[in-house]
Structure formats: C-alpha cells, structure tokens
Image (cartoon, rainbow, N blue to C red; front, side, top):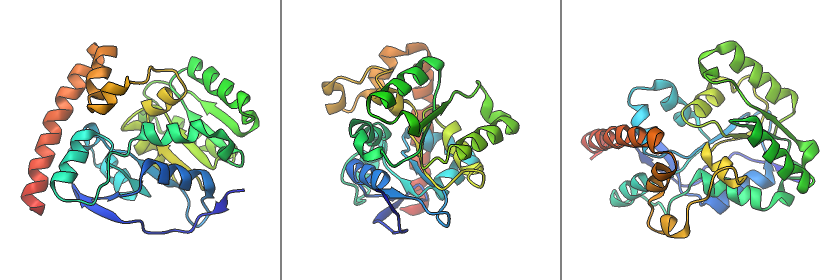
Length: 260
C-alpha cells in the first residue's frame, strides 16, 4: 500500500526564475505511484513546462504563480531542455508529461490503492479511460469529468469541479485538458481539492490512453514532436508554435539579461 510521502527537496536548478527538478520520468512516476499526500502537504502539483508555458508566463501571472507553487517542475520541451543544458544546469534529459503518465498507465497494478480522477476533453475519452480502468481492476477507483469549453473563465464551474474531485476522495488527479487551464485551475482551487498528486499533462494523458497517436520513434529520437503535432493538427498548431517560439526567445533573452 502506498505510504504517506514525506516532503523532501530533490536537487533543483533555477531557470526563468523557477526551480526545476532533476528527477527522471521514472523517479517521478515511482514517487507518485508509491506515496500518498498527507492533509498537511495538500496538493502536490506536477507541471512539465514547454516553450508554450514559458512564453505564456510573460503575460500570465496566474500561470507563473502555479509554476512557483508546484511541487515539481520539469523540462519538457526540447528547446527548454537544451537551453538548460547550454546554461550548464544539472539536467539529465527531457522529462515529459507524456513520459510520466505513460509510466503510470503502463503499470496499473501500482495504482490499485489510489483514488484516480481524470479531467478529460470528451465523452469518448471518458469511455476509453473507463475501459482502461475496467481492464485493470481500477473501475471502482476511477472517476472522470469533462468540463465545458471555457470552464476556466467561470468560477462557479471550477468550484463545482474541485468539489467533485474532492467528493471522490481523489489521491491522484490527472488533468488532460491542456495548458494553461489545468495548471491554473489546480493552483487556484487547491484549498478545495483533497490531498493528492495533481499531474498537469494535457495531451500526454490522451496519448497514454490511445486517444491520440503516439509519435513515431524517429520523431521522438530527433525531438521533432512539434512537427508531428503540426502534421496532425496544422490549423491549430502552426500559429500556436509560432507565437510560442517568439515568446520563448524573448523569455530566454530576459533570463540571460537578468541572470547572466
């Protein structure tokens, strides 16, 4: 049975004024699967920033605050990882939300003592998640919700979602509705949420459940997942990546200017 987790301070490094963890995907998945948060610890939010996060934080104080309050931050996007490596930070590789959740979903026996709640994008995804849980003896432990589009702009709906998560007795919260909605929701409503691990992993959860195609190995090897996503969703992703790339470069310039 998972044991209550004691707060610890894994090695971190500072980038963009934030503290990033050096734990691997396997380390984080093991920590999440094998430990329970205590009431005193509350929500342990895990955020895996990519260039979109860094770009948005320039004008989104709520997202920056969420990252500052997170229990763990990791370098997900490859430009972020390479920038950290270039700066001489003690990072040992990319640590992606997709990788962390894949580790968890691939070994469901480790989750039998968790109460799992998934916030998902559609009823179809809920069906897939419930089928996965049923096949692995986790049906009783799982509950799901599909918030309406724009729920993050309506406080009453966010409060209702937080209360639903709390009623389930959630110890493992998987947020699959994308950035920055997931990160901001968990941070702003942590007082209404139960003690739990909260993974803000967006599309990573959909890939782990088989709702979205996994990138081919060559795509992963050459770190061109961004190109893979553009191929899958060109209209939605081209503009997003262009804006994020510009915002990320501006954030890098500011980081170098202020921190040398």
